[in-house]
Amino acid sequence: MKKIIFLVLLSFSTLAGQKEALEAIQKTAMALKKELQSAMKVSPVNAIEVCNTKAMPITKKYHSKGIEVGRVSLKNRNPNNTVKDWMKETIDAYESGSNKKGYSVVRISNNQSGIIKPIKTMPLCLNCHGSNIKPEVSARINKLYPADKATGYKTGDTRGYFWATFKTK
Image 1 (tube, rainbow, N blue to C red):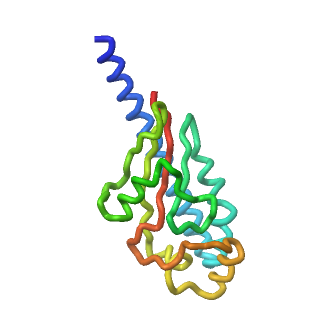
Image 2 (tube, rainbow, N blue to C red):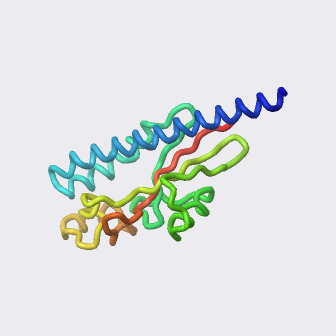
Image 3 (cartoon, rainbow, N blue to C red):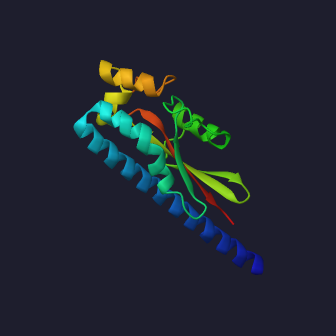
């Protein structure tokens, strides 16, 4: 009986961590979107500057109580946003089309799990991530991100993934 109660409590603890991690992803996504939409009102070049200087601090703002949040892409712009080992199998499933879920939960270790949530390309994203990027935008991207791979997307494409890790007891 004690074992069953322990497992039930463990499940509730894991679900609570998962909920908090999803909320952290949502808050990060909304904050980044708001910041970039505001920057785009000035210009796409301004949005590149904002993304370069504010995206990481915004992301770190939503780290809390054992939860970390970030973004990755197979065609990354920022070299720090590369796919981690624990993500590869799930991202490959999304990329192949065999995983169509809104998000996936991945067991990383006995006491840690992760969430992977696709980032879909919206029309506004095409100013900096599409195929027809203005020369001044392209020049700024190349200066800030010389190894940039994050272009050539169309509306609806998966451009990358939000991720969050959380403790499981």
